[in-house]
Length: 495
Image (tube, rainbow, N blue to C red; front, side):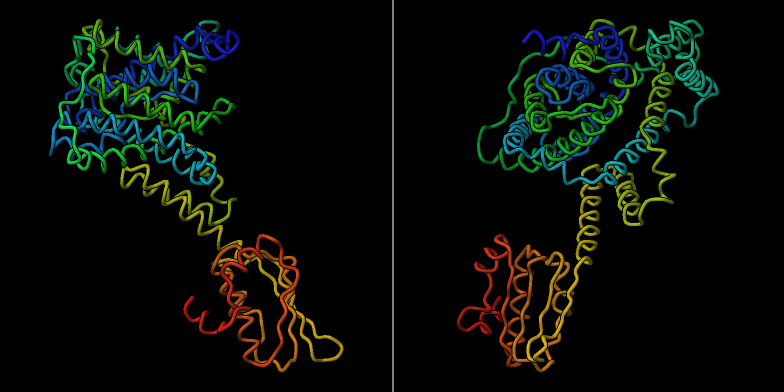
């Protein structure tokens, strides 16, 4: 137990504390912005970010990953808040947590193995683009001071690490925020600050139960929203966990993360917060700033609450230009620049999947739709490729009466047409042998294709024998095949 505590909490204390501090500052404008998107008071998003980050530090399956209120989930809440109010949103948040816990016990986190590398790359690039686009309003119709501050912030972020000794001791995003805040307070220049984003809460969150009727009508109202938020939240969390796995060269427990996200959202709902999930931008900030263990996530959540409740007057002075510089750094670091170079080297199907994922996510601002489109395209390309790897050869016996067919490859819905086309039904032979010892029949479509071939040969007066079928294929054919059953033709027509 002590060894686990040291490994997951105390093995990287200084870097985790500093990284968590940076993340906490970056979470404030994001949480306020997402609250505005959802149509609720800024404190709802801030309380959610605090509670989710703190709870997920203990319950999550990916140490060092940051979870809080997010835009992906906030977009799904707009209609619910508008039509039914805040209390129903809190109830939906609780139900979202329950659904995610159920998903975790159903081990749905393992579905991530069906997400191809090209989809993950597209997801990452799309998020990098969205993070950058989200900063553009802060750089539009502003004075030159904002551009100067942003440029100075980027200069600090990229150049500070080259300073001897101190450059390695402090995360450059934190230095950027502190220095630019001091410059703003001293100069008094007219630029937007965190305080202009919305009013910060002045009290701690309190436990409360949503004031909604506990009946079937309420369930029917919140269930569609909760299910959508649960799916989108887990999808973004699983994708972010995969990215953090690669950045840190470590593994994570996806099913534990599903359950952890559920528990965190339940706590968020009980403390007056909205549902959330993992945040790739803040997670990348955490990792780039040196955060590796659960302590960094805990510090981010706890320090966020301290900042907004007890140090609100100071926090409100942070210029948005400083946070814009940090987020631009995140977008640059998140984007897979290698994927642009690989467009000339990778197969066209891989490029199409990656670019389609990017295009759909950026266009819809819906990560779930983009990833699902990418997975669907990758599956179709894979099925088509495997379907092409099917060989059917034949040879005539010396007696000139028996034709032997050899089937090599995978027979399923995508290759069934090629399978049927590989046989000559008009050839006048007395006997046909179909050797499938190097083939596998995967689905009902494949079984139906075999039925068609056998029955067509029999119609032409040939005796047909299928040999060499493996046990798995034989089980499928015995259960669903009709070519060896009475009235085979009639049964085939009704397949």
